[in-house]
Length: 202
Image 1 (tube, rainbow, N blue to C red):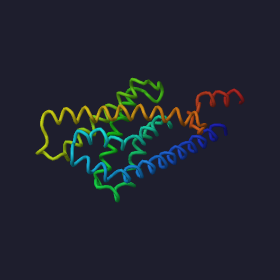
Image 2 (image 1 turned 135 degrees about the horizontal axis):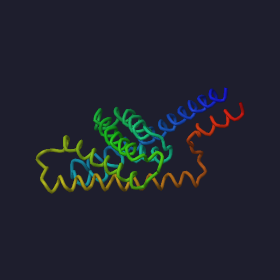
Image 3 (image 1 turned 45 degrees about the vertical axis):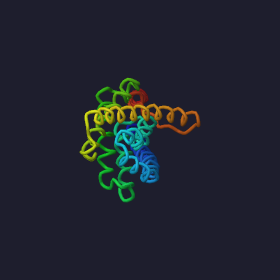
Image 4 (image 1 turned 90 degrees about the horizontal axis):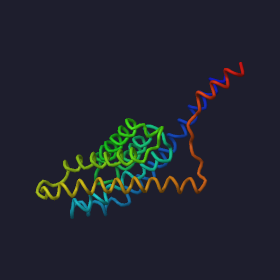
């Protein structure tokens, strides 16, 4: 009986997590669409400058990762944001890999580094930097080859990684601001403790 209630509680939290991912993803999509014309003009003017400004797309998914602290939430939020933005952004369908591949890369590093258990800042920023490298690799496909040079490639890589690191820090600040504001936060379910108490009661 107690185990059944535990499973129901877990399912409820899972639904709540997905809903919060959807809300953050929708807000991210609105920002992506609103700043789309500015970012497009920047991309045409300078790939290096765009590497810094264009990285803001990932801030919503990163905030979701810090706040919800669940494996997969960064990727789910990125997918929702990109899917909603597709009809309204110059990137079109490219918005999906542009958000989801860096998000998946970050998720992989977070999982390997056991961030969801430890909360290690080193693992967090390592994952964020990996996302920056991933979006850099994607950007090489769409940058006009006529403007590519060794210097541009190096500066674009540095801009992407730096931009992601800054947004990783912004996500931490947003997490703290939400906590100070008293926003309810999902907590892990202490399944082993719950089971132990249930066994003891029997």
